[in-house]
Picture 1 (cartoon, rainbow, N blue to C red):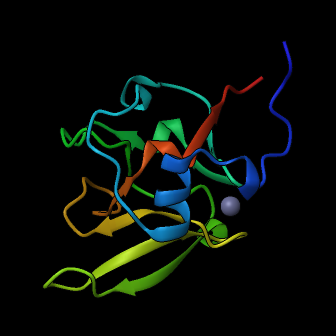
Picture 2 (cartoon, rainbow, N blue to C red):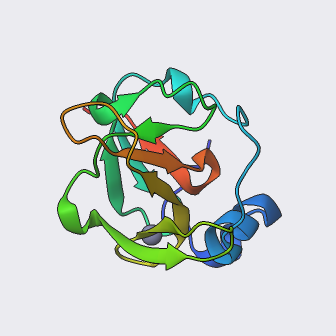
Length: 127
Ligand SMILES: [Zn+2]
């Protein structure tokens, strides 16, 4: 079996492209990342490490949710005016792919809820 090594944008599926390049949101429960308990979540486009599984929590939304990124500069932020109320868009800190949004209704200690599209992530188990 061939390993997925360095995924570039040309390798994205139409669904991945829609989310990561056009800022779409995948339907909830469209992946099994909600069940993942360990490992590191990476950007599917460039492989940048983004979130640790231990920072993931069950938000009940059907999207993988985290209390914080793996490092402060792993992600970038942008105000998204697509909806009536502005939301804070979360982008990959390396390749600027759209990942999801961050909200202020998360659990302690950060109070943040990083609501991510699973299609933009790939998980690698700690070795
Ligand atoms: Zn990236």
